[in-house]
Length: 327
Image (cartoon, rainbow, N blue to C red; front, side, top):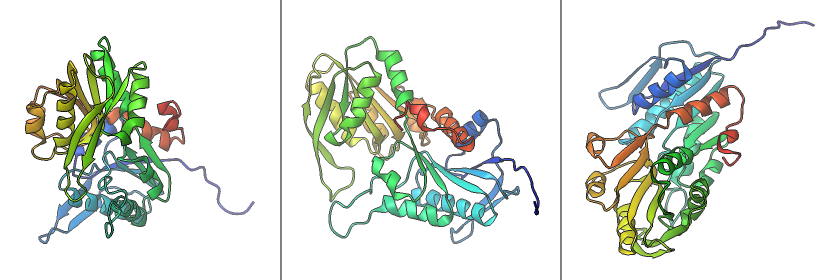
């Protein structure tokens, strides 16, 4: 046989942008590998520059960046990092975005609107991404926007284990904030032992962002502790209105549970004065200092989930097996 034969070795390298390095450091610690150093800065006109301090040729690269505010800056840095890896001959580039920016713009509500979630997928594919890892996408259909493998992780096991451990002895009802997320509420109900379901009937003004009205509660909530579940809390208006509606219907307590704590102003103020007993979130996004000081906010770490998924991808294992075949 002519030619050169060589047994190749896989080399995992983990990279982080500047948006939320604390989460990336926690993920890297779980993987027992250091983050690859880089030189990142802005020019005087705010253009972003990134250069990695090590050779990345032939590596299996995992690029972590959570799209927090200012979101456009950090999305652009993420794209530039992927481009730099592609041009430096990384063998495979996996984009890890705990929070997928622009995910709410996944369809057109009216004419002449963009589908920005699809644009995001196209941008990362063009930049050189081979695979995406994201947590609790706003809608599952976003997986189909990217032309390649997408690992859609679920924070539900982390959140439900916490709620079950703290409130499992109570009479619980899982509440969806709208009819569109009732499937997620059903999964919550199953993990909490088959507790009853309810949902909030609400209307939303498509011409105004972060504006909705909780009209009525559908389901039995009187005398029960209601666990109101959603994928994100942005300005907090919708979920606080829903909590008020549940208490007005006779609920004894309301627990808010969400994966992504965006907490745009005035979310912390609203949650502080909310009737909710506790707000349970994960650290897919960095919490502001005001939120960290609020006793009713509990932050759970998503890093073990991300690191486990990265290890499965690197070792050609099964990400689906992490969620009993449901991911």
